Length: 148
Image (tube, rainbow, N blue to C red; front, side, top):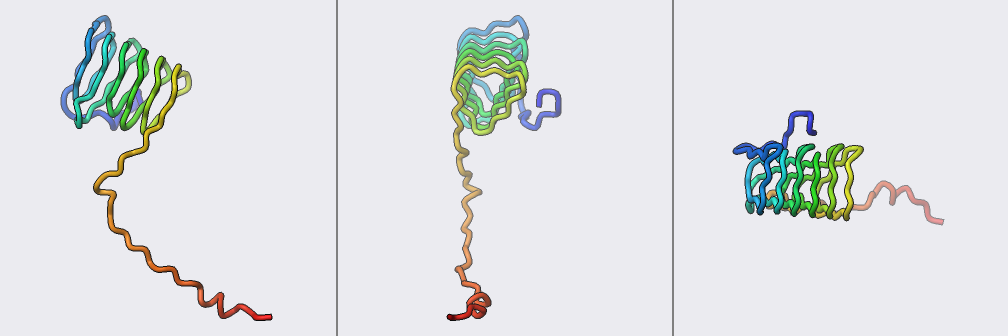
């Protein structure tokens, strides 16, 4: 996922926390967030926004991550909540619990915490009226039965 074209790259802005940069405090965002530096605070997607965070190999987040799509190849010290997809690459080190709807883990990734799967929320489009045909017993099988 990290080396190939990423289908979870959202349109809109991309924010980069460069290597060597340190952010102290909570970060609320939408779009894409690339973390090569350090964030000492929570990383939170704006309610209802499409958002993705990538913690790259040199990146560190010391706080909670609450974003629909989370890709980790660096370090996270805190709980991670990915309401859509969580991807742990080979260099990921997570010290905290993870909650996810969809999870992919590469060989070498480490999690020191609990795993909690969350069920997908049904979409309004998924609620269709489906009519089920009434059950009719196989009449051929009944006719071929022999009484003793």
